Image (cartoon, rainbow, N blue to C red; front, top):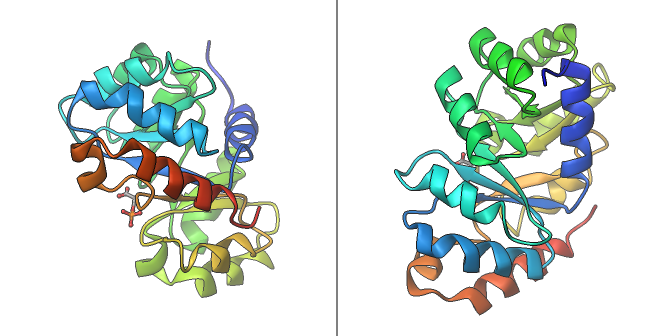
Length: 215
Ligand code: 3PG
């Protein structure tokens, strides 16, 4: 069922409010999907972004979507085909590094709540004009970090952000303490070496630490 931008932001907001951090996941093997999702959910991070950057990504989404307590989304949405495939695999939300008309149209038509990317006031204003009130601030650190994002709060108080890109355990609270941030995204909770080794207890522990960051 199609959704409006307003509904998309509302649903994305509910998902983002589940925990302070949304893990950004790059998963090469579908065998890792279930234990990885279980570890992150057990650690207190239920909303998971699986980037469409590996061949296994869609199968990983389908597998993770069956894990109790998880809310699985698809990241790195670049084309309408990505959107359709993510939705078909069972994604509950989508994330894009930017926002093109094609991506917005496709997510609205497919009924996939989207966190569209914005890095400047003008990009955020264009999305707001269309009805989006929740966006991914990307690439957060490179674009100007918490200082830039905090500066948008006063002129654009109706927009909330999920900063992603260079966010880590040390700087996360700089973002999470801003009035226009409701969660942040980051890959540090699921390092590639831990996924490859199957170090699920270590990932659960990183997730547990992240879940205790400011909300
Ligand atoms: C990404 O899409 O790669 C995210 O922005 C994650 O960035 P990070 O690896 O710096 O957390």
